[in-house]
Length: 183
Figure 1 (cartoon, one colour):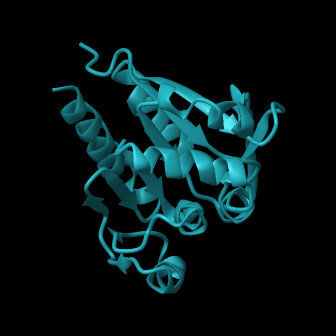
Figure 2: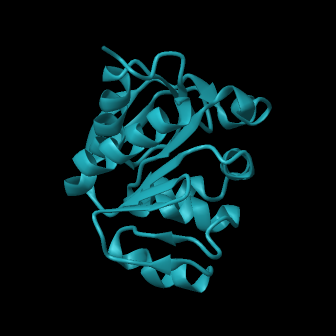
């Protein structure tokens, strides 16, 4: 029986996201009854990547501007990685605003791989413990975070993982956080 009905999860991504880092957790959330909303800079479909090879296009539900005007409708946030996605998305002030709103509200935020770049640009990692793709460790430490090399790191409502191999554990931790918030 689904345990996350009536839960709305915002997923922020732009072209170049690591496809499996969106589709894997998204499917796990949907299997538990959660509604996932893909949010991007524009309403055009966005392109996933299989590492360095183009993947599929995914329809966008809302723009950053639309979602930033009502972040309270979301119960949680998912940030997939992908170098191209992560490098661009961090430059969008409205994406940063959504991240800050979720942190300010104490809602679960799940981030994997290069997705942590958006957290850095949003100014929310100082004093936090998290993991990421190893090449981000200096960026995270320089922003005041404690970086560790673990499959899943939970720091309050922040759930982080390193790479696609971590997706099963990452998805379980995110779902457990959402379930705990319901009780």
